[in-house]
Amino acid sequence: MPRAFVRRPSPRLAEGLVTHVERSDSVDAGRALQQWEAYCAALTTAGYALTEVPPSPEHPDSVFVEDALVVVGDLAVVTAPGAPERSDEVTGVRLAAHDLGLTVVELTEEPALAEQSTSAEGQASRAGQASTEPAHLDGGDVLKVGQTLYVGVGGRTTSAGARALDRAVAGTGRTVTAVPIAKTLHLKSQVTALPDGTVVGYAPLVDDVSQWPHFLEVPEPEGAHVIALGEQTVLMSDAAPRSAQLFRSRGLEVVSLDVSEFVKVEGCVTCLSVRLHPWD
Ligand SMILES: NC(=O)NCCC[C@H](N)C(=O)O
Image (cartoon, rainbow, N blue to C red; front, top):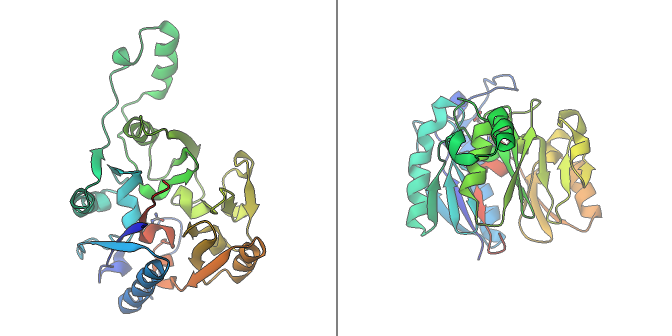
């Protein structure tokens, strides 16, 4: 049975970070809680067992649980969030992953160059990558498509963070491909994937449409954010009806939800849960 981690919104949601959007003075924490409950109900209806990470009311953005954990199979990689205000969110998420019996791993520091290679060529190329930058990774920057983990680099996630994820998933059969981003907070703020692996995005907000082999342009910004709830179903915001129709025309069932209060602090449907699937 698929499972999802979720985390109840903080009453301080209105204080959540904003980077690419104007701060709104109309975030309604009570309404956000209702929207979150509806989101949880939609996951349950779709067959997901929910694991609620204990809430962290002192962290306004803690409802965006996806940023704290990346799960591949039974491997749970605890992230290193790029915003200092969010770094402590991982504590409760790490415990929840451990309690569920997942293999919990942390991101590790960059290995010393000398240990990476003894060849002059290898040293030269890796020296070009290596730096003293810290390894930061937000789960919102990690898009799984097949065996590839695309990692958005340039916002909250650093190149060192992408390489640290690559090391963490070594042995799982997954490979990491770094994708430069500048136009949105996270990679998954600009593109997500349909169940068949087609990458969907709202072109004006996608840094480089041409890099996606199977790209489908959607007509609304909110249409770029989907969660695959199985082979035939996607969950998305109800603010993108034309995108929903486009997905239906491809034979998909669409579950639409109001997530307006989370959008005001730059969230979307993907970041409100971490999904674990038997097929991942
Ligand atoms: N994965 C996501 O899209 N997370 C949204 C995080 C929004 C939050 N206000 C932040 O800036 O971190």
